[in-house]
Picture 1 (cartoon, rainbow, N blue to C red):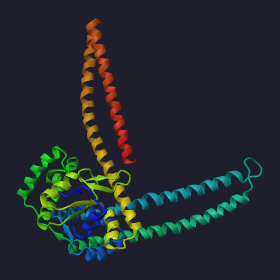
Picture 2: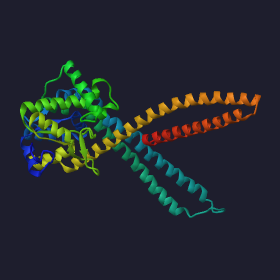
Picture 3: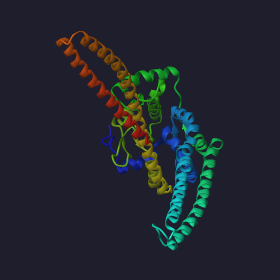
Length: 395
């Protein structure tokens, strides 16, 4: 085993860029749709078709996941990024301007009579009102211009459904690996059950939100990478925007991939005798500029990096919201059951006191009080979790 198998030295990184196969996860392929079209064209024409010609490979399961999610992701920038600009931001600007106009008119109305208070000289107010009206007219043109720009971008995005440059680049530039039959997938799920029980990467975090064989999707991809690397005996650089601990170790501040999980480095080396490293998509493009001489604008790489980080934050919020929902559902069932029990117990204590007020009845009354306190605490806990869920949703 090479001494520095777990470290990425400058010389090792340079050698890997000269000789390795580049493998994209579906998360990184799908995120090309969030890059400007001209940047995509630069990447596909200069990097994929020239610099990395015959070095791009995709596991069959990555192809499956990419094609399964492609149409949904194409429309995502419209629904998540551009529609809110129209329905929220521009609407808020318009409403704010209208509100200011009404306030100025109210100021004029209340201060224009010189025979009673409040009275103010109107010349300054009139001058300001004229300036405001000019701003109001400019804002109408501004809104039209922004809406036109958004319409053009939305059309460009929607055109991808019929003329998809990402799909075209994938089909023309990537060699696709062999798929597994159903029996082979079942065998992987058996191994995966053991790996996930002990948090052995990759993929165990998918237990939280996936079902069926898709729980083991990352492991299926990894197994296909292992098969390919054993056959071709060349280093593998894996591009992945799925920034979870079951794939990689992240730098704390900027969420860049610091290294793959050590278990993955060892497994592929023991299996195939090759080295393995990972980047997120922004790191990949930055290093393509560095080692292959491409000229992808750093500004666009920075925008992509910010997008990857925001997406990771959103996913973590979504997972936490899902966990909260499950916890709330469980607590509400407990509350329902406990409430019924307390109600019946209260009736029992009331019946006791209607007959006698001895120590037995008194002790049961104390027990009832404790049960009611527990019920109150449970209600408060549910209220706290509901508030936390609202906070995470941003409502």
